[in-house]
Length: 318
Image (spheres, rainbow, N blue to C red):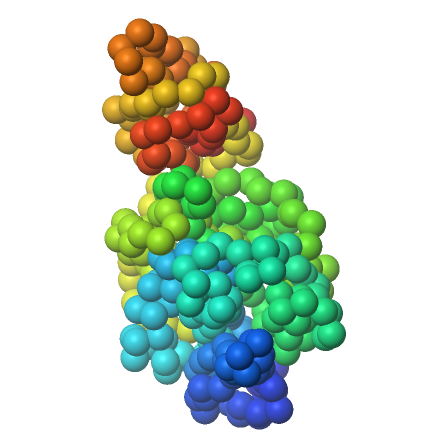
């Protein structure tokens, strides 16, 4: 692929090849007249190459991706790419990050506000600025997420298997698990795809808690992808990757105390005992049986569960 070495323009600032910049996506005013800024970091080589976006904090309690980008932009080889450009947004949802919440103050999910509107809600305006200031100028992107509602996700890439570019990027990231994940309406990934921009979603760990396995895997995957794009010069061992075509949830049929000895990321067999639900009075126990062969890609860490709660996410090879 031939890349042109054009200037990048973000919020009225020109960033020329061979230069770096720290700027804001835009300014957003709260009811107290407090101004919220969304910092954007740009690192450019003088040599033509792809423009890669790394973005985290779409939900304010998803801190593992924020830590991954923090570690990446501290590296000299990332700050001085051999070719192309890196655009890093460590925290896109600053206001939810300050509150430590998943949603915006009005209850909206930022990742359901795309493509956004210039004059809409706070989330809609952030989405609009991202879609108009950043996405048209990139070639590829990685959007970092974690599990929510006490779900711990095993480090994984989610992409669309039918999209060759998307799948190839996932392979070069080289995680242990890649899940075929169709687009969802009003998400960054789907709206970017409409503009011909391929974005991977990395999932790892759980909300409001550091998971160092996920942090290390996310960082190493980024560096492997950057090496493939010839942005950095280093060698990292690749994971043997398992491709999961679909997934299913094991849910609680009764309320009680959830016990499991299974390890996140491990392989399980159909019919295998994967856990127990016990009532707190010692009167009832229910066995949890795996409905399929597969890999555990997410687990509920909450011991006290209610009927219908999601307990275990299983990825299935086909």
